[in-house]
Image (cartoon, rainbow, N blue to C red):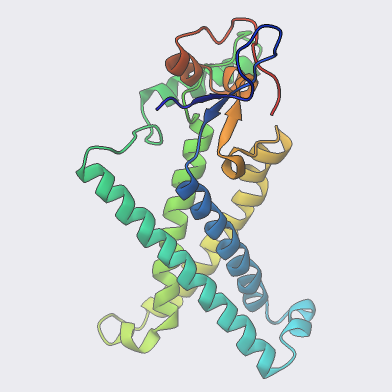
Length: 244
């Protein structure tokens, strides 16, 4: 089935807006669960990490509140862990069936695109690189968060079950896990707030993770190579579509 859809029939005198499928419904609900669980984990984790600060002490002013914050953190951790396990299982299944798309895997083209983008930013060329389905910045975001979340999940369970862990591992693993967990959480949180949100909200408003699609103008401008691959048309040709 074609990934291209028109918002209006291609009849004479009708302006046709073409849309391109980008994310499946399954990918979108994974993103929603990831967004919600990560937000809860970050907020409840910050409160606990800086529990000696006045603003944090106001939130953790009673044992009931401390227990509530801890329970919220653990529930969100279980949700996030479930997403990670499902995501990995799904990926392994697709790989085994040879149905896995390689669009998110880094390759030599990303190195070329990054170099081309540097030249563009230095005014050494007038043309931006033509990106495929995902550009090198989006791949960086995915893989950085993939490994960051993996580190936080592993260290989080070490902190959650210290007795069981230290029965098979040295006791020094606990303080090391606490340091790695909190540091990685801060780094990941800052990365999302500054890097990821800038690219999807400020640089341009990209709601494709919520709508599941991109309009033709965005495809031509931001994913020209993918547009040309899907349509067989030049991305530099006059636009036939409008804004979503």
